[in-house]
Length: 220
Length: 217
Image 1 (cartoon, rainbow over the protein chains, first blue to last red):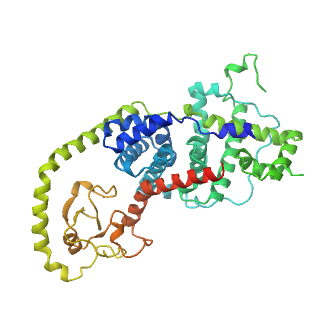
Image 2 (cartoon, one colour):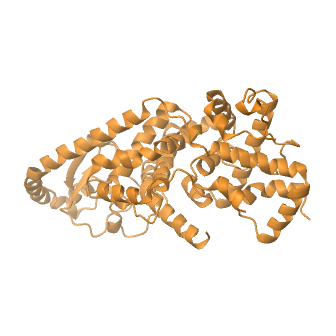
Image 3 (cartoon, rainbow over the protein chains, first blue to last red):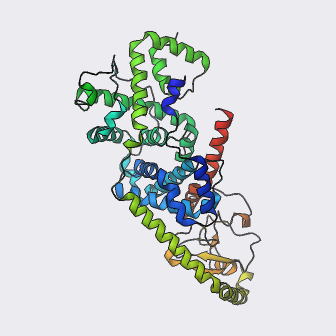
């Protein structure tokens, strides 16, 4: 269904020909052009690192390290791959290495690698009240959404961020995290349902009150 | 007819366009009549849409400026090195010859490796220039991105490195290894493998994924 897929398409793809030209020039040694090449992806690189490390300064440091590593290895990049995916996978690896090194794993619970058994039963909301994209203009809405995401267990959060925020595909997400495709699908389902429940509950708690469309223009 | 539970279980795959045609048709029919499942679909789609928006990612203030500065530092450091390297080449060549002579004897004895998990080198040119660092167990080709503790880098010949117990980097020295890479429990080696994963595997993974997309658009 075209409508279903529309949501999942990969946005933010820059000018492909210009990007390939920049890559080729950096590969030939024009390293000063590298920042121009990666600038469209700096948000996504940072978000990937933050999803894994959950600490702003670590995430920034790892994002920088990942960029330097990408620059050092730019000649290994082949244009049949997506540059953004390559960059994000380097970042995820850097972040996972950093976390392993700092042993924060222990703090997040020993059972974290296990997928939970049994189905997640979503809360029963007869009507979904659409939260429009324009609501993201408001900082408090973005913060509420970020809090909801942060409340998920690591295994759900990481998969969700890579698939739905970084727009890696299922296979790329599995490879970046070193888990099976089946695990990605299971965790993604649960993450999406849990976030839906949290956002629906957020309505009840007034998170999205005072949204602009409430002024007599309710979309549901 | 599918049940509500089946719809919940498949809702994510449905949005990924990853359910087979028969089930998809049944789900479509169910969604037309079941308000709860329709609400679930709408909510899940809304979640994906909102979080997929670039505005959801907030960069710390000054992030871009700091990144640009750090990249610029790296670029200028690279330039300084290239102007030095012009006259370093003959010096390095002399050191290389001296090194080969000095360590010729030590090659007759097989030294013990710093890492018990490492693999000994195979057919490596003894006078090849390699990099070693303190507290590491492996030697690398210049420019290998997986050199730990870079501040302590030393350049020496392969045979000198081997004599000191260093083993070849599993990545940049791969062609001098006898066998394919084996799993290692050693943290240092594991990091190295993972660091490698950061680049080459990312490359391979993306290429594979592109291929997969081509096969299953």
